[in-house]
Length: 367
Image (tube, rainbow, N blue to C red):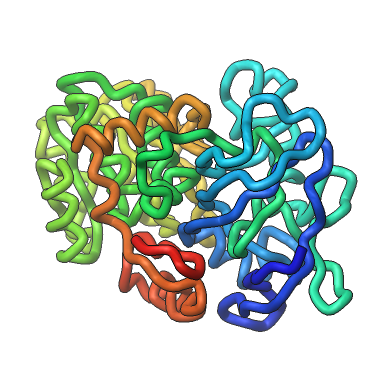
């Protein structure tokens, strides 16, 4: 079928919308009419030629309505409302343990630019276009997705608002609730108050953390962090940041989360830990960085990399949606909506940090 898709090409700063041809779903796949798609920093990196082959249709925080089913689909029906998350095999040890972000074949499924057999679902003007980014390529009016990429959500909830749950929000909240398993009375420092960091702060409040330290260079974002649950605010350019965090609790924090790429912040995220504390990293540093081993060994401290918040999307996303319904997880305060036609403006605002979580609305959709 003919669809509208935002195609990313080499040398361009944002995708451009064009008419494209979308294949019918194959066995184990569904066609989803996209209602909204969040923009994540991973999309920005991929647009710049890192991570995945070009040309491609990006987008990996999609939400929409199931329109057609390929052979073998048993858990979904036409008309179901779904949030799209990452792709996984469903059979490897990580998938069996409900940790699909660590699927043995996650990297080719997410960044390979097509199905596992290297076929693509998209073309434009006779040119093959890479597809299946994170199993979805949802910067488009429609997407072909593997069954495991979709998560059914209640039809009475607004799909446009739920879209970002598929990556950024699940990463921040999952890192707190799954990776670190923060318990009532514990303490946490969050470096970077973008979408992932603010989701972590909201989740830490849900978990009953006693002190939640938010660190950022933006006073405006720090104010929002306080509204969403942070108990203490520090600017990231403060001298001896780790010492300032340790002073808040008198012993350091039980855990930290670093959402930035700055090597100095990676040091601070380790140095602010109390004995036996854990530093969770959801991003990689720009340039060379290595942890100092003696403070880790002498204090029993841990360093942990995290993908997708260690969460199982099919159980975790509906849980977050229910918390939102109850007013306990107001992630909608992070969202700024753009018409799909304004994807270039949304990308520019995301790069400049003018918004926290841009969300594209497909034609005819309202926030």
